[in-house]
Length: 468
Image 1 (cartoon, rainbow, N blue to C red):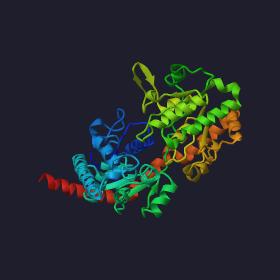
Image 2 (cartoon, rainbow, N blue to C red):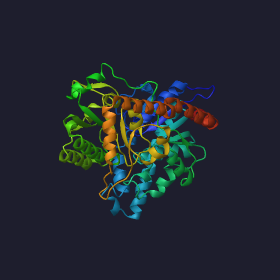
Image 3 (cartoon, one colour):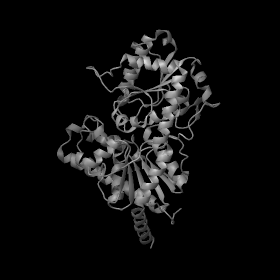
Image 4 (cartoon, one colour):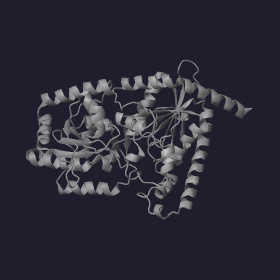
């Protein structure tokens, strides 16, 4: 499926996982949908497909298990090179660390060879690397992608969602020189995309890489609506029609600051005690690959101590509607369309997928003024309930009493609620709609097209030489 006219290309996405409910997976699917709509040929390589991946034909998918975030090789290297993750990393001698790094590089190069064969077999013109060279969740993937660029001269677009220096567990390592070299690589023949002006500033000033900015986007042209399927959500989970469902539509990870959402619910229930019996706090998405098992138990204990009705429905929320064990399973959008309020109080986010999805579902939103919200989202004119990102001496979010009053207003005053969610929908649709993604991707590929075609010619010559 080799495109030869105009600026149409065969493009391969490479990621540690696809088909999941996390932000990177969902944004990747949006990119695939947009690029397919433009006429490009799409392929995927992933360490793991969390669900049936229908965005590209099955024959155009490849699984390389060693790229997975939870593969034995990934866990082996993580535990040895990141002191905060492994008990044995601090006991390695300098000589053994060098041997370990050499081993990592050699394994990554072997995977690069497998990727290169897939590229040649399918006449792929360029790759899009999804966070592989930004966050070391797939170390072998990072080495392999870098090898494709440096040695095989494959045209590449790096899509960075967040970076290793933003995560405390990765900020200290025994391979910092390697991370600085390949995460991300500085190569004049590749292009980089980030999701925010902050990330653009960091890469430009610190890494001397000039990236494009493509914000997270949502499909406001086809927003979620109530239908015969998701109308059954409340009944399936035993909620009454007049219950107040406060939803946390995120994964269970510490940086989401779910404990602050629980405390917010507790304070609201105390102030408006006549509503307390109706309020249910729901978390929709599963644990991540972050070391957060104690975190969930702490959340359960905190909710119990504060009398918050706490529901974890992660085993019934998937990237697509399905049925498990005779029970209906829902998407995050299905849950949101049934929510009365969404809490989204992160200390840090690469952008804010859950925020946009909430606005698209026309649900009242409570959010902190986290950094990217202040720099790239707030100026759009959306109207959530805001909580300033200020914390007390114990690290708890400071919640002003006026916030509780504002929440009560949007829950009880239909006219005010409709005005706020309607305005937020309009403003977000203008700034973060799929049309923005289409326009920016078209521009990036157009500007990069000469290098992509040069890569195509190099690959063709190599392929001809190989088969002679």
